[in-house]
Image (cartoon, rainbow, N blue to C red; front, side, top):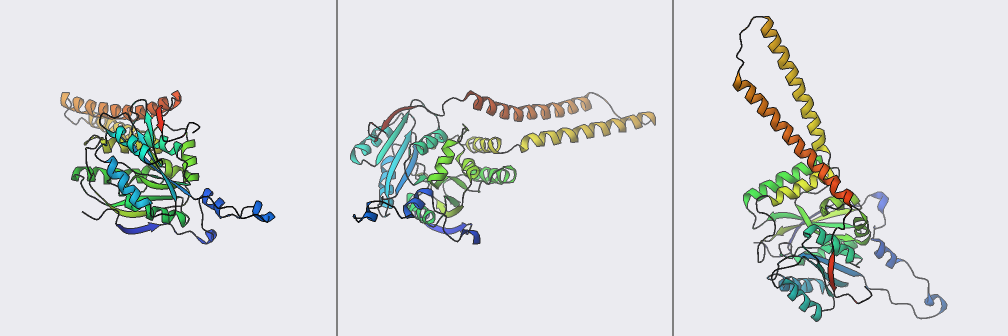
Length: 362
């Protein structure tokens, strides 16, 4: 197992000739502008505001990891010349997760917690944390410690160099079974080929986003919360930092071991590609042409007096094949219709039961 947070490579898009000046996040760029105020009238210059980094941590039944996460985060963040805040986005838990986070809130005013009225899931917990954050940049990281907090200073450094999105890209995936790695690799390959936006392979939600990226993401009305696709949709200069992913520190994953990756991949495909619908049309045309050709062949054989076998097995096989294609097509269409139905209801993405760590005016 590699040391937590060890960076093993960097890739990214180098700003071109048209970008001679570093592209800073809006809030950072504002800090770089000379202020006009009392200093111009002879008064002492104002002290510039210290930049704020927000860390959003979705959590559900993570009592064994909360304290470890806090300790490793504080050790990584205290070395930065930034103010910071931790925002735990918590679905109602059945263990001591909420209790432990509340203890941290009382101990450290930089720790905050959002508690939802019911379980809305990790994607919505992430979106809620982004909307509640106040930082000039925001990092999203899971509470299971598979993504090392020690990598965050490297993400911050790339942000200060001018990139609006710095996503952590997995070089190795320790603790994952071979079938899951195969499904993930195949899923990323498919999504990369057919998606309407660029979704880098071997990435998760672990990434840093500038304030203008976060503002644009939370302004979107889509209710699926597929962060990797939403970040690609928003755009802005992006780069990656390679790292070795660790096994889960403690506890059990909340995703289905067999269907979790498939469902996530399906969510990404339906949300960011119409290719499956186009594929259905293509398959329909091909099968229609094949059926027409077969009919002509049968007609020619019949007129030529050639004997050929026709019976129940042939009919059953043909009917089963075409019925399967029809049901598959209906299922694909149903996914898109269901997505339209969900979006048209315009229900709240989440409902917050309580907020801890903010003052009464927040």
